[in-house]
Amino acid sequence: MKSMILVMDFGDSECQIIKCCDSMLTYGVGYVETANKTISESDVAWNSSYPIIKKKLGVAQQKTMQVAISKLDNTSYIDPIAVKDNVEYTLYVNNRKVASGYKACMDNFPVEIQTAIKQMTSWASPLYHKEPKA
Image (tube, rainbow, N blue to C red; front, side, top):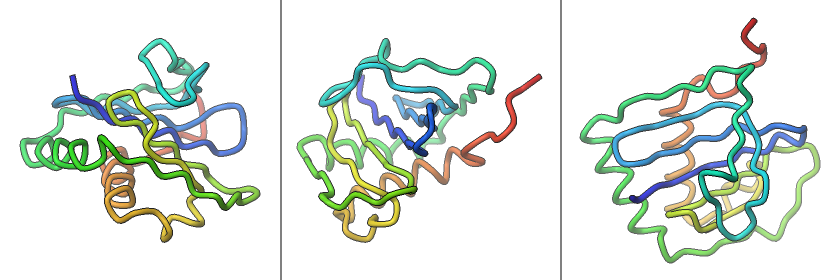
C-alpha cells in the first residue's frame, strides 16, 4: 500500500499529522513516537482529545497523490537551515523519510516536495485545531 505522511512539528509536544493512503486522507493532532528514517502505523500516536478527520479522496486527488508518491519515492532532502520558532515539516513516502525542513525555508525545497506539502495541507484544511473537543 502506497502512502505519504506529513508531520508538522510546531515546537510543542504535539504535531499535526496528515496521512494519504490509497483513497483516504486522515489527519489530526498527535505525535510520532520513534520514527527517524522510517515510520510505521504504530509510531503515530493520535491525541484523542482532538478530532481525527478522514476524507475520501476524489479520483483526481488520488491520481495526484500517486504521481507525487512515484516522483518522491527515491528522493532524499534534508534542509540544513534550522529556524527557531518555526514549523518543521517531515515527509515520509511509503514509510521512508524523504524530506525535512522548516516552513520558513520551503522555497529551498525541491519543487516536487513543495508541491506535495502544499497539496496535502490544502486537502487537510483546517489544519490545526486549537481547542480540544469537550
